[in-house]
Amino acid sequence: MGAGNVGALNAFKHVGKGAGIAVLLFDLAKGAGAVAIALWLLDVSPLFVLAAGLAAVVGHNWSIFLKFTGGKGMATTIGVLAVLMHHYGYWCGVLIFLAIVGIGMAITHNVALSNAIALICLPIIVWLGTKSVPFVSFTVILGLVVGLKTLPSARAAWASSEGIRDFIRGR
Picture (cartoon, rainbow, N blue to C red):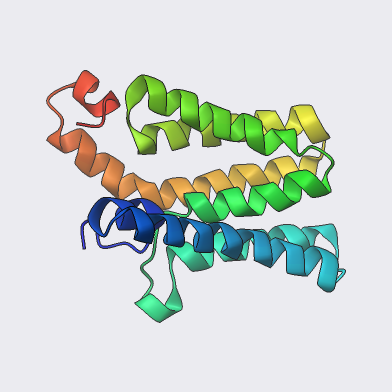
């Protein structure tokens, strides 16, 4: 239905509030679970933990079970970040990230643009809170993965907009 992806926003818009919330919770859990299992159950290297988080987002965006289609990966990304930020002792970093998304939504009413702004800010947020080069590098890659999946719909929105104001406002 709708955009044809399996993400929370599409479910919320085209199936309903209950389905959207359920999909959101499952997508968050998917990202958080992948990192938590790698971190606390498997006791693997930090790079493998980051790879597990990236694999969760890539698997969500291009699922082999859905003929390499999927969602855009933002909720799964937030689940990954929630566990990683907690692990790095910077739990408020995910709150800062969500605040940027929320402020962007309040100003623009455009989910994709708000997410893009937050993803651009993410490496800075992580650097200021953790000073971890691997984690910062991971956030750059994560932003590129989510951006790559979002790019086609952003181009379509741009093409159908009557100007930059319409695009920013998500009309």
